Length: 416
Image 1 (cartoon, rainbow, N blue to C red):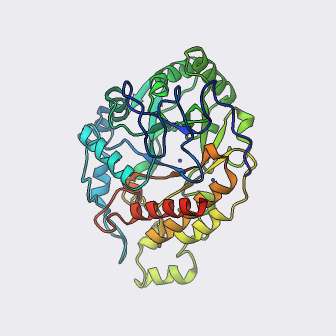
Image 2 (cartoon, helix red, strand yellow):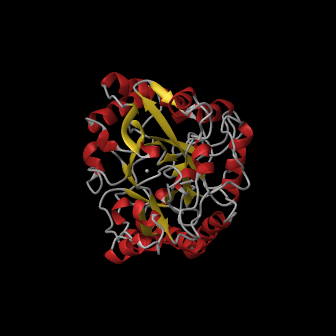
Image 3 (cartoon, rainbow, N blue to C red):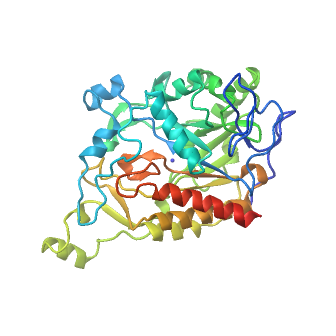
């Protein structure tokens, strides 16, 4: 990837309610910031007003795969889009180039370890990796499967199924489908069985003792209630127990409706919220005339420009949902690196404005969430071609990470 919440759902016998994960399989239980040890033994809550959990969304696109070689050219990764970006007007922050971590390859364990170490240093408590499944075929799975198999890095994680058709949307050709989603009962079972090893991993993030699995667009499923029921039954039968099934709340038909009606447990706001962008800039007759006269860059008429701080104000003013709901914030958005026409740019994003949003989301969470769900998502850790990343770049360095740590410190202080 949008209350008062019901009382926390019951945890399995012997499991303390809360947001949990654990150490590398086979190791002795150890304390992990914003997480806890193996949830089947000696668990204690780790998600509380005094110690909220920040989960940042991770894009695994930064390594080559045969499909991308065929679709985009040999050796393609997201870095190709990032590096070719150019500023469209004076002061436009493009290209956005990585600083500390460089142009990493996520096949390398050193790259994955460096991401986790940097995240932990600034208070991020876990990663949510996008997971790509197309009727039995997985894409971009190598990094997260290596994490599961190796036990490194010893850092909490969960998965979010990006259940869209794979199209050429990245370069504006949304209707050209490269790989389509097809849903069936047989595929539901095969899919869930592929996920079971992750759900059993002691590092896997759990809420109320239940492995958290997120569907990006739940309303794309033809019969979500049946799919979710099938998943739950398989998880019980295979000894995983109950699941915590969630959606990312975007701008589709499922947004704003009670997610429990389709068998979900939780809705997670997806930021930026496209429904709350506010008025688009440079659309009036004066702006159009200025572009014709060369007084304004023509790019203002070729792309969609909005104000970041106005969007934040609108998001914070949204009514509180009556169903279980979690907040999400974003450091910015600018996908001109991907789209030569019709990109979206949130102007005037700053570390200070992002920190204000995160502080507000944490304060809302402290007020509206039970102790075991003191969780806020951050979109994203590394969406470089969307201008949406906490990882340091050459212009801002660690400023957004430092703002994250400061917002978390203030939230903890306010909860004392």
